[in-house]
Each structure stands twice: as C-alpha cells, then as structure tokens.
Image (cartoon, rainbow, N blue to C red; front, top):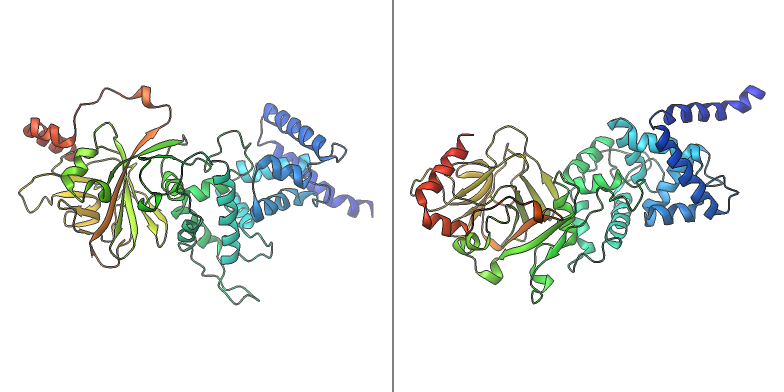
Length: 425
C-alpha cells in the first residue's frame, strides 16, 4: 500500500530530477529565488505561487493566462498553486524541450477549454488574449490598433481533424504547426509566455510607427497588429522603428515619386499594396531599391499577406530571384518596375513602372500563392515604410547620398554595372 501511495510522488520526483538537468546551477538558484519571492506574495506558506500572483507576474491576460496557469500547475494538481517542481518541469519542457515537445505543449496551451479539441473558438480566445497581452504592453507605439485585424490571422487557420462529439472540424497538431509557420510573431509570443516580462520577450515587440501627424490612420494600410505580424519575419528581436516613406494617396501613384522618396538611407523597406478588390499584401525588401538588370537581394526578404488572410512566406532556397528593381530599360526581357520572386513577367509580386497595374503568380522562390483574386490586378493604394532597428542609427555605414533617381541621372553606366555585378552573384 505504501508503494502505491508513493508512486505518483516518485514519478513527479523523477520528472523533476530529469527536468533540473536542463538548467545550470545558477539558473536553478534563480528559479528558486523567483518561487520564494512570488510564493511570499501568494500567502501559501511559501510553498507555491497563487493563481493571482502567477498571472500578475507573467502578465498573460484572458483565457490564455488561465490555461497557462493550469498547465504549469498540473504536475502537483495545482490546488495550492504552482510549486517549484511545477515551474522547473514546465520550463524544461516548454523552454528547453525538443521541437516536438514544445509544439505539443503550445498546442495544449491553445486548447483553452482543456477538452482535448482545438477549435476555432479556442483560437479566437487565444488571439484575444495575445492582443490584450502584447498590445497592452505597448500602448505607446502609436495609433492604428485594430482588434479586427486578428480576424485575418484566424482566417489563415486550417481545421482538418474530425473530433468525436464536436460538430465542427478541429485543428490537428499538423494544422497548428503550419498555422504557426505562417504567423511567426504568434509562434514567438506563444513560445515565450514563461519568460520574465521585463526581459524583452520575443514575440512581444511591436514596431514603432512614425508618420506625419496630419495623416488619418484610416488612410494607412499598416496598423500595429499588421506591423507586429510582418516584424515576425525578421531575424532580429530588437524593436524596430518604421517610418512612412511613400503613400500613393499622399504622394501620387507614381513610380518616379516612389523612387525619389525611398532613399538609400532606408535600405530595409516594407512595401504594401491594396488592390481594387480589397486584398492587401506585400513584401519585405532587405536591400535598397536600386536599378538592376536582373534579380538581386538576399535570403532575408520575404512576401506576406495581410487581408483577408495573414501569412508570411520566406525564401525556400529554390532560386535567388528575390528582389527586382528595373528602371528605364528598353528590353522586353527586363520589365520596368519593382517586384519579388518568380521570373520576369511571372513574378510572385510585381508592380509595373506606371504603378497602375501589377501581377501575382504562385512562386517557388517563397512557396507563396497567387495573392490577388486574378493574376493581374490594379493597385488602389501603395504604401512603403523604411525600417530602422532601434539603436542602430549610430552604427550605419557611410551611405551614398541622393535618391535612386538622382544617382541614376548622375552616372547611368555605373548603376548599370552595379546591377550586372549583383545579378552574377
């Protein structure tokens, strides 16, 4: 009888010993100190962290916070709160486990009802919690927040699993992994909920948007949620500052004006297009918009969709046809305009030099689908933002002065040589 009673405790103790090996002595000491501090605030005789203190410390709001507390405390039953054993075992699995272990933990975490079935209503609750958690921490990042934007994130989800006793389709683990791939910011935030809130948690950084004060946010395609989504495709974790460089409603729908506004000082840019049928999509250009006779760029570039579904499509390595900027070429084989991926005349995304038409095709460069309802589209709004990593201003190398057009006029031959040189890389 004694052995049967000791069995659960022994199993828990064994898991605790194994989990402890994932941390250094200093890390374990820090976790013990954290438990002691939070337990002292919890009025649990120093044994555990209460629900209220746990949620306040980690700052995860709504149904997702409740589910996180439930999962972390399940090792001890959670009746008295989260114990040291609970914390270490959960952190070892969630933060130091294999990719499969982490994915399984997050998948269970998103099942906020705890019924073993991940449905659309669960994801709605998760997204509402993420919105409240991430954007409550970033109230000072500017106007333009829109909770409805998260509907586009939900629209990217696929539910292919038949679940017993549920009329609607559920999301399988494979569906969930694919969804997280399309929404890297969401995956980053879900994967870092147990990090200290003051440590710059990945997935919690919201870009700072800078634009003229006299511009109504209703005029902008970009808002904080979309910027957060696009920023998830960057490799850096630093907070970025985004500056509006060009907007077709303000500056005119002109390729020359666009090139005049987008200077070499803003090497990284986000191009966003809304077509006349209401779809919104674009691309991140990691290199300046400069005249080339062939594709150029690097593997940091990517394409994205914002509405009606939100997704990010990274380079696959299938080819190096990443970024395109052709200016004043007379050859039919070199279409004038800007674009990403695919092939000339068959781009993943392309805007003609007149800025009055474009096209989008399925693209192996980014495994991206056709973005517009038909291959050919007409842009209604074109927007471009310059990206600057905070703190990187003083580290900029010396840049060539002048806009793309000015440099082109000064030395056409040199620009052509640069274009040819880059295309041979």
